[in-house]
Image 1 (cartoon, helix red, strand yellow):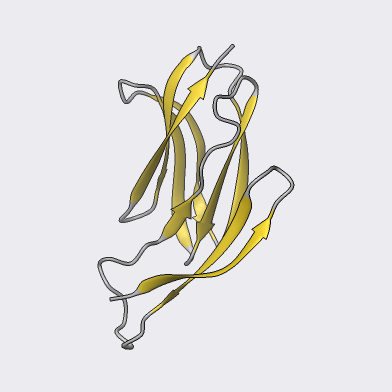
Image 2: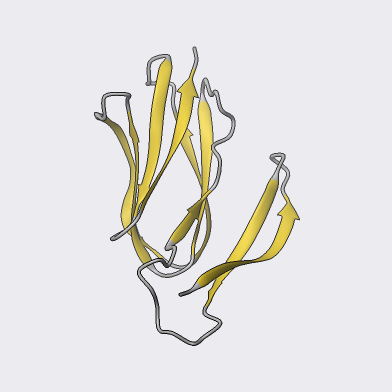
Length: 122
């Protein structure tokens, strides 16, 4: 089994902290079905009226899909669908074309999906 270890925490100007992680295996096993491919941060600002920012950290090179869906699961925006190298990413999203309501931001790799709730207000 592999684990995620926090390496450092750095204060960022947007208010909050950037946290850096590394995957490690204390026994030396080559990978596990429980490995975490990425870490999705909270969305800020939330609620949002013009733009919002999503941060995520990739631990390995991955094909990443980032999308916004409404409460019914309908895809409203495809933000990203590409291969990314390991590292920290901040993605600013324009939400002015979305109606007031609750949405879900989902980030997907080949074998993992994480979703965060986002509120849009006008």
